[in-house]
Amino acid sequence: MDAPELHPALEPIAFLLGRWEGAGVGGYPSIESFRYGQEIVFDHNGKPFLTYESRTWLLDDDGNMVRPLARETGYWRAQPDRQLEVVLAHPTGIVEIYIGEVAFHKIELRTDVVARTGTAKEYTAGHRLYGLVNGNLMYAYDMAAEGHPLTSHLSADLKKVS
Image (cartoon, rainbow, N blue to C red; front, side, top):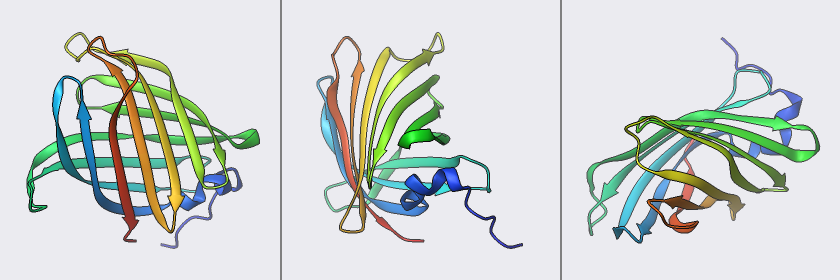
């Protein structure tokens, strides 16, 4: 079966399509700093949204996988005038809705809504920056959780592998 044609609304974010892999660093006031590996996959089915899947794993000092960390899945919905809506779900009981915009190959997103189950950790806001830099997908993620204001949490450098 042939791949579906890209919906025209997705052209501003088409640079995200594919599978990206790489490594990053993380930290937060309530945890020790760490190194992690990550895979992100953006795909489409011809409709006006991208599917999104991310998985991360803890790395040791030699770059070997120690154990799985976070996962998230969702949809990136392009809107008129280079606006963007992103819906993400986490197996930890958190769902986020981000709004933001695309400027060339840079995307900035801020949470509009955060919903948590009764057993989820306290998390109130997120801010994400994504950018295509020298062919790599770079991103930074700040979060407000456990009584802390928006604070740097993750950053990574991912290479396109397919």
